[in-house]
Length: 498
Image 1 (cartoon, rainbow, N blue to C red):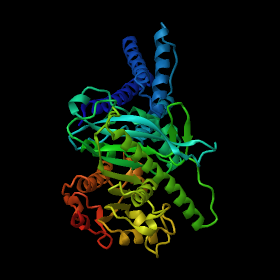
Image 2 (cartoon, rainbow, N blue to C red):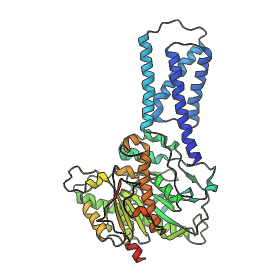
Image 3 (tube, one colour):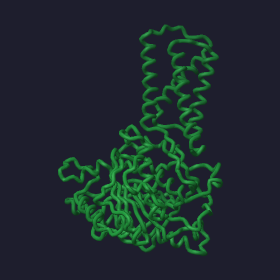
Image 4 (cartoon, rainbow, N blue to C red):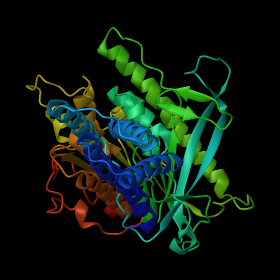
């Protein structure tokens, strides 16, 4: 495990455990009347220092507010005891002491409960041999007008992160990036939960080191584009991205203005998710999604054009000559999965793709695919395909079953259809780590994360690197939740046609 990442998380947890112990000790002494100026001074100092250090290090978290309240109240009481030269004579009733004890214990317990509900977690260690670097880029497509915004005439603008392999020695000792606030914004929007609950995410370190040299090991690295879900962010699946980069991929995460939760530009402008209007029929909504996914697929093609320009000799950039554009893949979740399928159908420069429970809107639903393709669906959503099932998953739409059947039967290369038990639609993102109690009730959250990153990595390792992957051959005892649908899954066509 990355020592710096573990250390940062351990420090946060250590300070909070220490604050709990000091607060309970101080509360016991104050409530039950044991007085000693040295002890009072020591506890006052420890409590004050704990809160000051929390503030100085940016460790304040919403979940621990009840504990902060106990600590602050105790600091005031201890201060009053210290400034009084003589104790004030008064008699405390036992019932009052018990009541105060209950309040202190209840507040402390609520803080501990909230901390377990929304924990500070350690990001799973990537399994590859590379460290991870990143740069942020603002791109403008001068050939397309922005049709989703309120201001007419503007050009389509994107924000992307490029995550790339780094020599571990070059990354050693460098500060790690933390999850950005955009992840909290996205979770808040998707689940209709106050975003303040997720402000602590910016204190959790990833394994990413910004603005460091690209590893020189390979003449050219295979490239993957990542498209997030609607109302989400390019940072929603960092565990999968880190895993892929550690294995030697350059990954470009795209945010799509007005369908991503929030896109912040360098000049301090931001665009926000624009909710869909109400549609009178299912067909009208379907047509709207065809248009929306078409815009996103055009974003992906524009990003690939930009990468081609960066790769050209003589540009002098970080990625000059280092992008293997004969080995380009794309993957995405939900609306990003639909973007993946449509980009594959429209542009054969994308050699392989993975859709994490996305729809099929656009030309892909009528023409199928010619590149290797993997589709992963959660068990709950898969049940919605049963015509006798009346309780349909909310991400299911009327035309889905027909489109899925067509694409899986009429595609001309390898394709995989996997269902994953115990997962729900958002399980393909970081959400199991954010709250295991809420979002990973029936599965270990780290195992949940490992399912996605293992199968996505195995797929691209085979189809972009040519490395045989037993995980693609069928059921695995390591992942019993994953089942291949052999009616839709077709292997070895790609190998035969190479």
